[in-house]
Length: 167
Image (cartoon, rainbow, N blue to C red; front, side, top):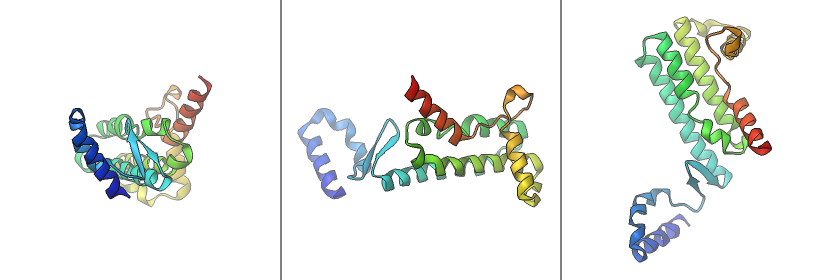
């Protein structure tokens, strides 16, 4: 159980004073999994819970930036270069089936925030086809002389995973 794992962790700390710096990790001791370099490894349910927490944090920050940042260009740059990329490291280092739902939620949140800021919230009245067209335009590559180029996280994760397997 997790209680036994924590007790074992405390005994290891007491027996090895050189491990004293790890004492603050007690909350992370679990029998369900562990995080290695920020990547959750363990039982699928535990990994999903960690991903859900990370995704919720990103979506919370996306929503917070909508109200805090008034300049549309600054808002776009923060969304593209900060929020849209926050799960990229996890995406490159995890199995796609485990993370694809989380990536889709972040993608939808970022695109929604950009549409909301760019249209002064009138995008809420759009049809689903019009929303889809706007998403395509926002994801158009930069070489087409389009400003946006928001790379979908799910697609870039698959590409990164494949390129690691080939190299």
